[in-house]
Image (cartoon, rainbow, N blue to C red; front, side, top):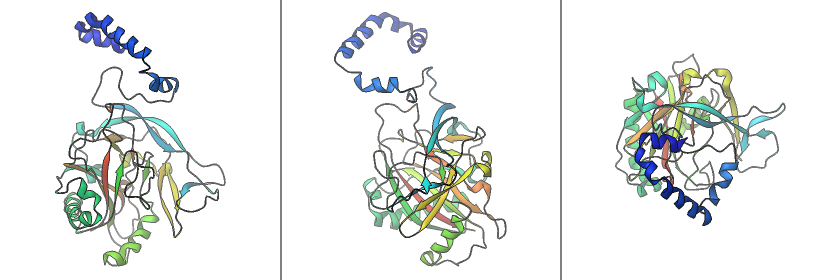
Length: 333
Protein backbone atom coordinates (compact mmCIF):
# COMPACT_ATOMS: atom_id res chain seq x y z
CA UNK A 1 0.00 0.00 0.00
CA UNK A 2 2.73 2.44 0.88
CA UNK A 3 4.54 1.86 -2.46
CA UNK A 4 1.34 2.34 -4.42
CA UNK A 5 0.64 5.54 -2.50
CA UNK A 6 4.16 6.77 -3.22
CA UNK A 7 3.99 6.01 -6.94
CA UNK A 8 0.55 7.61 -7.29
CA UNK A 9 1.77 10.80 -5.64
CA UNK A 10 5.19 10.80 -7.33
CA UNK A 11 5.17 8.82 -10.64
CA UNK A 12 8.91 9.30 -11.06
CA UNK A 13 9.48 6.66 -8.40
CA UNK A 14 8.12 3.97 -10.74
CA UNK A 15 11.18 4.54 -12.97
CA UNK A 16 13.60 3.48 -10.24
CA UNK A 17 11.55 0.61 -8.82
CA UNK A 18 13.87 -2.15 -10.04
CA UNK A 19 16.95 -0.26 -8.83
CA UNK A 20 15.49 0.19 -5.33
CA UNK A 21 14.20 -3.39 -5.18
CA UNK A 22 17.58 -4.75 -6.20
CA UNK A 23 19.27 -2.73 -3.48
CA UNK A 24 16.88 -4.14 -0.89
CA UNK A 25 17.56 -7.69 -2.05
CA UNK A 26 21.28 -7.07 -1.65
CA UNK A 27 20.78 -5.76 1.88
CA UNK A 28 18.57 -8.74 2.71
CA UNK A 29 21.36 -11.12 1.72
CA UNK A 30 23.75 -9.11 3.93
CA UNK A 31 21.44 -9.53 6.96
CA UNK A 32 20.40 -5.87 7.09
CA UNK A 33 16.81 -6.68 8.14
CA UNK A 34 17.41 -9.37 10.74
CA UNK A 35 16.94 -6.92 13.61
CA UNK A 36 13.34 -6.16 12.60
CA UNK A 37 12.14 -9.71 11.86
CA UNK A 38 10.99 -10.10 15.45
CA UNK A 39 9.02 -6.89 15.20
CA UNK A 40 7.22 -8.21 12.11
CA UNK A 41 6.26 -11.40 13.95
CA UNK A 42 5.15 -9.56 17.10
CA UNK A 43 1.51 -8.66 16.38
CA UNK A 44 1.40 -6.21 19.30
CA UNK A 45 4.26 -4.13 17.86
CA UNK A 46 3.28 -0.52 17.22
CA UNK A 47 4.75 0.68 13.92
CA UNK A 48 6.52 4.00 14.21
CA UNK A 49 5.65 5.30 10.72
CA UNK A 50 2.09 5.92 9.47
CA UNK A 51 1.28 3.97 6.32
CA UNK A 52 -0.90 6.55 4.59
CA UNK A 53 1.50 9.44 4.96
CA UNK A 54 -0.50 11.54 7.45
CA UNK A 55 2.06 13.36 9.59
CA UNK A 56 -0.13 15.82 11.50
CA UNK A 57 -3.52 15.93 13.16
CA UNK A 58 -5.18 13.10 15.14
CA UNK A 59 -3.64 9.63 15.16
CA UNK A 60 -4.27 6.30 16.85
CA UNK A 61 -1.69 5.34 19.48
CA UNK A 62 -1.35 2.83 22.31
CA UNK A 63 -1.19 3.86 25.96
CA UNK A 64 -0.48 1.75 29.04
CA UNK A 65 -3.52 1.81 31.31
CA UNK A 66 -3.78 0.14 34.72
CA UNK A 67 -5.29 -3.33 34.96
CA UNK A 68 -7.70 -3.66 37.88
CA UNK A 69 -6.32 -5.97 40.59
CA UNK A 70 -7.67 -9.39 41.47
CA UNK A 71 -9.74 -9.68 44.62
CA UNK A 72 -7.60 -9.35 47.74
CA UNK A 73 -4.86 -7.37 45.97
CA UNK A 74 -4.20 -3.64 45.75
CA UNK A 75 -2.66 -1.58 42.96
CA UNK A 76 0.86 -0.32 43.57
CA UNK A 77 4.54 -1.20 43.87
CA UNK A 78 7.31 -1.63 46.44
CA UNK A 79 10.25 0.80 46.33
CA UNK A 80 13.42 -0.31 48.17
CA UNK A 81 11.37 -2.64 50.39
CA UNK A 82 10.53 -6.36 50.30
CA UNK A 83 7.71 -7.41 48.01
CA UNK A 84 5.21 -9.14 50.32
CA UNK A 85 2.73 -9.81 47.54
CA UNK A 86 -0.09 -7.46 48.53
CA UNK A 87 0.47 -4.99 45.68
CA UNK A 88 0.21 -5.67 41.95
CA UNK A 89 1.19 -3.41 39.08
CA UNK A 90 -0.13 -4.74 35.78
CA UNK A 91 -0.85 -2.68 32.68
CA UNK A 92 -2.81 -3.25 29.53
CA UNK A 93 -2.27 -1.43 26.24
CA UNK A 94 -5.30 0.40 24.93
CA UNK A 95 -5.64 2.23 21.64
CA UNK A 96 -6.76 5.85 21.86
CA UNK A 97 -7.07 8.84 19.55
CA UNK A 98 -4.23 11.30 20.20
CA UNK A 99 -4.94 14.90 19.20
CA UNK A 100 -2.28 17.38 18.15
CA UNK A 101 -2.79 20.11 20.79
CA UNK A 102 -0.93 22.60 18.62
CA UNK A 103 -3.93 22.49 16.28
CA UNK A 104 -6.49 23.04 19.04
CA UNK A 105 -8.31 26.38 18.97
CA UNK A 106 -8.61 28.06 21.31
CA UNK A 107 -5.38 26.67 22.82
CA UNK A 108 -5.69 24.68 26.07
CA UNK A 109 -5.28 26.67 29.30
CA UNK A 110 -4.98 25.78 32.97
CA UNK A 111 -8.52 27.09 33.42
CA UNK A 112 -10.13 25.22 30.50
CA UNK A 113 -8.22 21.92 30.44
CA UNK A 114 -5.87 21.90 33.43
CA UNK A 115 -2.80 22.28 31.19
CA UNK A 116 -1.17 24.76 28.83
CA UNK A 117 1.90 25.20 26.66
CA UNK A 118 4.00 28.24 27.59
CA UNK A 119 6.73 29.94 25.59
CA UNK A 120 9.38 30.34 28.26
CA UNK A 121 13.08 30.24 27.29
CA UNK A 122 15.41 29.21 30.10
CA UNK A 123 18.81 30.69 30.91
CA UNK A 124 20.24 27.26 31.84
CA UNK A 125 22.32 25.17 29.48
CA UNK A 126 21.86 21.41 29.38
CA UNK A 127 24.86 20.64 31.60
CA UNK A 128 23.65 23.15 34.20
CA UNK A 129 20.43 21.18 34.61
CA UNK A 130 22.54 18.35 36.02
CA UNK A 131 23.76 20.57 38.87
CA UNK A 132 21.10 20.59 41.61
CA UNK A 133 22.44 23.74 43.21
CA UNK A 134 22.14 25.65 39.93
CA UNK A 135 18.66 24.27 39.30
CA UNK A 136 17.47 25.31 42.75
CA UNK A 137 19.06 28.76 42.71
CA UNK A 138 18.23 29.79 39.14
CA UNK A 139 15.74 27.48 37.48
CA UNK A 140 13.32 27.45 40.41
CA UNK A 141 13.02 31.24 40.11
CA UNK A 142 12.16 30.92 36.43
CA UNK A 143 9.53 28.29 37.22
CA UNK A 144 8.02 30.43 39.99
CA UNK A 145 7.39 33.25 37.52
CA UNK A 146 5.93 30.89 34.90
CA UNK A 147 3.47 29.26 37.31
CA UNK A 148 2.39 32.56 38.86
CA UNK A 149 1.60 33.96 35.42
CA UNK A 150 -0.22 30.83 34.25
CA UNK A 151 -2.21 30.13 37.41
CA UNK A 152 -2.79 33.50 39.06
CA UNK A 153 -1.47 32.12 42.37
CA UNK A 154 -0.25 34.62 44.96
CA UNK A 155 2.52 32.29 46.16
CA UNK A 156 4.41 29.54 44.34
CA UNK A 157 6.86 27.19 46.05
CA UNK A 158 9.00 24.73 44.06
CA UNK A 159 9.89 21.78 46.25
CA UNK A 160 11.28 19.08 43.96
CA UNK A 161 12.44 18.23 40.46
CA UNK A 162 13.41 15.17 38.42
CA UNK A 163 15.56 14.73 35.33
CA UNK A 164 14.35 12.01 32.95
CA UNK A 165 16.13 10.42 30.03
CA UNK A 166 15.37 7.66 27.56
CA UNK A 167 17.34 4.60 28.58
CA UNK A 168 17.47 5.28 32.33
CA UNK A 169 16.62 2.14 34.28
CA UNK A 170 14.49 3.35 37.18
CA UNK A 171 11.23 5.30 37.21
CA UNK A 172 12.34 6.80 40.50
CA UNK A 173 15.38 9.04 40.94
CA UNK A 174 15.90 8.27 44.64
CA UNK A 175 19.14 6.40 43.96
CA UNK A 176 20.14 7.88 40.60
CA UNK A 177 20.85 11.22 38.96
CA UNK A 178 18.09 10.67 36.41
CA UNK A 179 14.98 8.56 35.97
CA UNK A 180 13.25 6.93 33.02
CA UNK A 181 10.18 8.44 31.36
CA UNK A 182 6.99 7.08 32.98
CA UNK A 183 5.25 5.13 30.25
CA UNK A 184 1.96 4.49 32.08
CA UNK A 185 -1.12 6.64 32.63
CA UNK A 186 -1.07 8.27 36.06
CA UNK A 187 -1.71 11.41 38.10
CA UNK A 188 0.70 12.41 40.86
CA UNK A 189 -1.78 12.87 43.74
CA UNK A 190 -5.09 11.65 45.10
CA UNK A 191 -7.66 13.52 47.14
CA UNK A 192 -6.00 12.02 50.23
CA UNK A 193 -2.31 12.30 49.42
CA UNK A 194 -2.34 15.95 48.24
CA UNK A 195 -3.55 17.53 51.52
CA UNK A 196 -1.20 15.21 53.39
CA UNK A 197 1.71 16.36 51.22
CA UNK A 198 0.80 20.01 51.83
CA UNK A 199 1.04 19.47 55.59
CA UNK A 200 4.36 17.63 55.19
CA UNK A 201 5.79 20.56 53.23
CA UNK A 202 4.50 23.30 55.54
CA UNK A 203 7.54 23.50 57.82
CA UNK A 204 10.04 23.12 54.98
CA UNK A 205 8.40 25.90 52.97
CA UNK A 206 7.57 28.09 55.98
CA UNK A 207 3.86 28.28 55.22
CA UNK A 208 0.77 27.99 57.41
CA UNK A 209 0.08 24.37 58.35
CA UNK A 210 -3.51 24.11 57.17
CA UNK A 211 -5.43 22.61 54.27
CA UNK A 212 -8.37 25.03 54.66
CA UNK A 213 -7.43 27.11 51.67
CA UNK A 214 -7.34 27.21 47.88
CA UNK A 215 -4.18 25.40 46.74
CA UNK A 216 -2.90 23.36 43.83
CA UNK A 217 0.01 21.12 42.94
CA UNK A 218 1.32 22.03 39.49
CA UNK A 219 4.04 20.41 37.39
CA UNK A 220 6.23 22.16 34.83
CA UNK A 221 7.78 19.89 32.19
CA UNK A 222 10.28 20.77 29.46
CA UNK A 223 13.06 19.43 27.28
CA UNK A 224 16.59 20.31 28.37
CA UNK A 225 18.02 19.51 24.92
CA UNK A 226 18.67 22.84 23.20
CA UNK A 227 19.77 21.20 19.95
CA UNK A 228 16.86 18.89 19.15
CA UNK A 229 13.09 18.92 19.76
CA UNK A 230 11.42 16.13 21.72
CA UNK A 231 11.03 13.12 19.41
CA UNK A 232 11.17 10.02 21.60
CA UNK A 233 8.49 9.38 24.24
CA UNK A 234 6.71 12.75 24.28
CA UNK A 235 4.29 13.60 27.09
CA UNK A 236 0.54 13.15 26.56
CA UNK A 237 -2.17 14.70 28.73
CA UNK A 238 -5.79 13.74 29.28
CA UNK A 239 -8.53 16.38 29.45
CA UNK A 240 -9.76 15.99 33.07
CA UNK A 241 -13.34 16.77 32.04
CA UNK A 242 -13.33 13.46 30.12
CA UNK A 243 -12.33 11.36 33.17
CA UNK A 244 -15.00 9.97 35.47
CA UNK A 245 -14.06 9.60 39.17
CA UNK A 246 -14.92 5.90 38.88
CA UNK A 247 -12.04 5.47 36.39
CA UNK A 248 -9.43 6.43 38.98
CA UNK A 249 -7.52 3.71 40.84
CA UNK A 250 -5.53 4.47 43.99
CA UNK A 251 -1.92 3.41 43.39
CA UNK A 252 0.20 2.72 46.50
CA UNK A 253 3.95 3.29 46.68
CA UNK A 254 5.49 1.57 49.68
CA UNK A 255 8.83 3.13 50.71
CA UNK A 256 10.94 2.09 53.72
CA UNK A 257 9.88 5.21 55.64
CA UNK A 258 6.35 5.91 54.36
CA UNK A 259 3.47 4.90 52.10
CA UNK A 260 2.62 7.30 49.29
CA UNK A 261 -0.20 7.14 46.80
CA UNK A 262 -1.19 8.56 43.44
CA UNK A 263 -3.81 7.70 40.84
CA UNK A 264 -3.63 5.16 38.06
CA UNK A 265 -6.43 5.01 35.49
CA UNK A 266 -8.79 2.40 34.12
CA UNK A 267 -9.47 2.65 30.40
CA UNK A 268 -12.53 4.39 28.99
CA UNK A 269 -13.36 5.38 25.42
CA UNK A 270 -14.49 8.75 26.86
CA UNK A 271 -10.92 9.85 27.62
CA UNK A 272 -9.67 12.69 25.41
CA UNK A 273 -5.89 12.72 24.89
CA UNK A 274 -3.57 15.28 23.30
CA UNK A 275 0.10 16.22 23.10
CA UNK A 276 2.31 18.97 21.77
CA UNK A 277 4.63 17.42 19.15
CA UNK A 278 8.24 18.54 18.70
CA UNK A 279 8.51 20.52 21.92
CA UNK A 280 11.74 22.51 22.24
CA UNK A 281 13.68 23.75 25.24
CA UNK A 282 12.09 27.16 24.64
CA UNK A 283 8.68 25.77 25.65
CA UNK A 284 7.28 24.14 28.75
CA UNK A 285 4.11 22.31 29.71
CA UNK A 286 2.34 23.57 32.81
CA UNK A 287 -0.30 21.20 34.20
CA UNK A 288 -2.25 20.59 37.40
CA UNK A 289 -2.03 17.32 39.28
CA UNK A 290 -4.30 18.43 42.15
CA UNK A 291 -6.45 21.42 43.04
CA UNK A 292 -8.68 22.33 45.96
CA UNK A 293 -10.61 25.45 45.06
CA UNK A 294 -12.01 26.53 48.42
CA UNK A 295 -12.14 25.63 52.09
CA UNK A 296 -14.91 23.04 51.91
CA UNK A 297 -15.07 21.57 48.40
CA UNK A 298 -12.17 19.13 48.64
CA UNK A 299 -10.45 18.00 45.45
CA UNK A 300 -11.58 19.62 42.21
CA UNK A 301 -12.01 17.07 39.38
CA UNK A 302 -10.39 19.44 36.86
CA UNK A 303 -7.21 19.39 38.93
CA UNK A 304 -6.41 15.74 38.17
CA UNK A 305 -4.56 15.87 34.83
CA UNK A 306 -3.59 12.30 33.98
CA UNK A 307 -0.49 12.04 31.83
CA UNK A 308 2.00 9.58 30.38
CA UNK A 309 4.97 9.23 28.08
CA UNK A 310 4.02 7.29 24.95
CA UNK A 311 5.43 5.76 21.77
CA UNK A 312 4.63 8.21 18.98
CA UNK A 313 4.27 6.34 15.64
CA UNK A 314 5.44 9.50 13.87
CA UNK A 315 8.78 9.54 15.65
CA UNK A 316 11.63 9.42 13.10
CA UNK A 317 14.19 6.65 13.42
CA UNK A 318 16.72 6.74 14.87
CA UNK A 319 15.12 9.07 17.42
CA UNK A 320 17.10 11.48 19.55
CA UNK A 321 17.10 10.50 23.21
CA UNK A 322 14.52 12.39 25.25
CA UNK A 323 16.09 14.48 28.00
CA UNK A 324 13.63 16.41 30.14
CA UNK A 325 13.08 17.98 33.54
CA UNK A 326 9.90 18.23 35.56
CA UNK A 327 9.57 20.67 38.45
CA UNK A 328 6.92 20.18 41.13
CA UNK A 329 5.24 23.24 42.55
CA UNK A 330 2.78 24.17 45.29
CA UNK A 331 0.57 27.11 44.31
CA UNK A 332 -1.26 29.05 47.04
CA UNK A 333 -4.11 31.44 46.28
